[in-house]
Length: 436
Image (cartoon, rainbow, N blue to C red; front, side):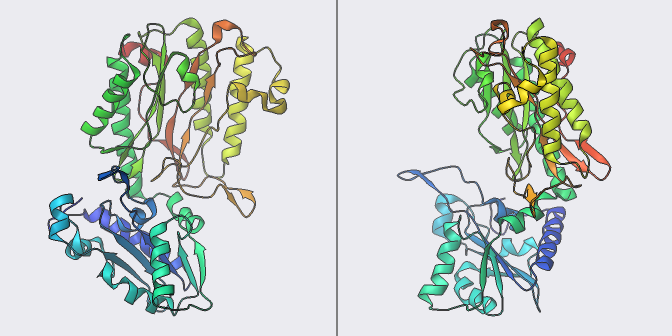
C-alpha cells in the first residue's frame, strides 16, 4: 500500500513477516543477510514499465512500493532485523504519489528502521563482526552498488568476510509457505478461477484471442489483483500446441478448443491455472477423447501428492499414463517402450508436470539437495499440469488428431497427510459443456 503516515498493514501480515524474519535470523549462524528493492525500469524516454518488486525483498519486508529500501537481517550476539527506506520527499510525491517514509515503515515490525541515507554508516559497523554475508550480489545491481560504495569509496576491507549468493539459502525458506501465504495464494486462485470461468461462459466464435485475454484480465483486476503472474496464454485451434503461445491475435472459430494458461498475482503471490474447453460448448469425439486422457492423468497425479513423494516420480507417472492412454486410443502407433526410446514421447508431451509456485510463478527453492532429488514437504505449493499436444504434421498420429492441444493445471498445497487443491475451477467435461 503506497502512502505515508496513512499506510496500514494488517496485524496478520506484520505477525507473519516478523515470524518469518526470526526463523531466517536463527539460521544465519553469525552472518548477515542483505536484500535490496528493485529499481524502477525505464521503458523509453520518461516512460516506465509497471513496477514489480524484487520477490526476496518483498518476502522479507512486505513492501511492494517503488520506494528504495534495504532489509538487513543480523544474527549473532544481538539478533535483529533492520529496514532502511527513503525519507519522504514532497517533490517526488508530486510525481509518483505518497511514499511510505520512516513512519509508515515503522509499522512493519522491524527491530530498527533507518533512513536509507544511513546505510553506508550502519552496514560497515555490522559487517565488521560478521563472517558471512548472504546477498544477491550477482543478480542485483542495487546490491552491487551498495557493497561497492562501502568497499571502494569508504575504503573499508572486510577480511575473512565470505559473500554468498542467498538464492539457495533464502529459497529454502520461501519454498515452505506459512498459513498467511497459503491464504494469499488461495485468494489468487479464487480470483483467477473466476476469470477463467467468465471466459468459458462468454467466449464465442468470431471473438479474437486478444479480446478473450482482455476479458480474462479485466475479471482479474475487478477481483482485486493488479497484476497477472505471467503473460497470459490465450490460444485457440492449433495454437494450443504452442506451449508459450503469446501472439493472442487469431479469431476463435466454431469447433476450436481454447487453451488459457493464466493466473493473477495477489499481494505478490502467483496463481497458475490452465483450462482447455470448446468454443461452441461441445467437444468433438476426438477432442473429448484426448481431453479425458489428460483429465484422468491430472486427477491421478494430484492424488499421488503427499510428503516424501518426489517431482520426478510424478513426472514418470505422467509420461506413462499419457502415453499409454494415447496408445490405447490408437492415436500413437508405437509401443510404450518405443515411445520412451530417445524421449520420443516429447513429441506429444514435451514439458514437466510440476514446478514450485509462490512469489514467482516458477518459484525459488532447490529441486536437488546434496545431490538428491528433493522430496515434497508440507507447506510446499506446486502445480500439476499434464498435457497432450498433437502437432500439425506430426508423424506419430493420423491427420484427424493434428492440431489438438490440451493442458489442465491446478495449484496444489502439500499438507501433512496429503494435499489440498487450491484451484476450484470447472474442468469436468459435463461442467464445461454446461457452462455454454
